[in-house]
Length: 310
Image 1 (tube, rainbow, N blue to C red):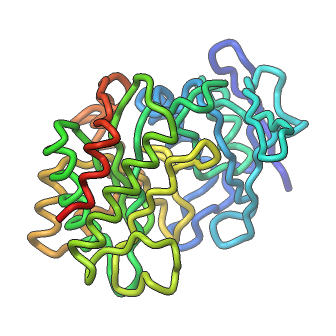
Image 2: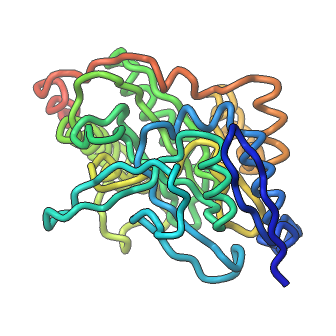
């Protein structure tokens, strides 16, 4: 039996339902707990979503049920859910939802949107990403510990380029790294640099790293996905839940934590569930706050091309 109730949030009425429905059977984590988590995380999460088109990933029957992506704003969405148009390859437009405020975030959680996948650009600035991203995807038996080593190699390259980058867990099996730009960079430029870095590391460490898109080449290696730097690609948002067995979260970490996990060969040091993340934010604040404002300039094309030289 469906139970519904109204929540009054920041002057808006948000309908929620079936709060006792279990979304994570292995832990008993419910839909109500999903909504509660996102409400508590909103102060640090919303700044990373504001103004960005978001691809919804909905799990109406929880993580063990089927899911679907929803790009177009649902017809049943409240009129106060803001949208922004994103052009398809055929020239038609998709009105993506933007989760700019707490009522919108709660609405999305209530329609079983467990994962948040925003673009790197805001609104209509479709050619202007705010950051360069890497998705480190380990091919079994490689795991997040192997990703730690690759992340540190990437960090060293960017340190030589006098650029800072910030690591986070994917909340799944790998890691992501974000290089804040917040300037005039284009996706063409960010993809060029990301691809060059990936190719350079694959050439230097062929037993540990692969930059080729072919899945058959990834066994036991870390695939550096440079292709995320594209106006049609989304990356899971920091602090987003993941639809895994347990309610794990894409969590910002420090480089010291990455180094410690690598040294101890202990993947559990980089596995965080909702309760862990709430404690971390209460203690440390938003480790990804600099990503929102730090202005950095990409190197010249000549410098980028030199990365492949031995």
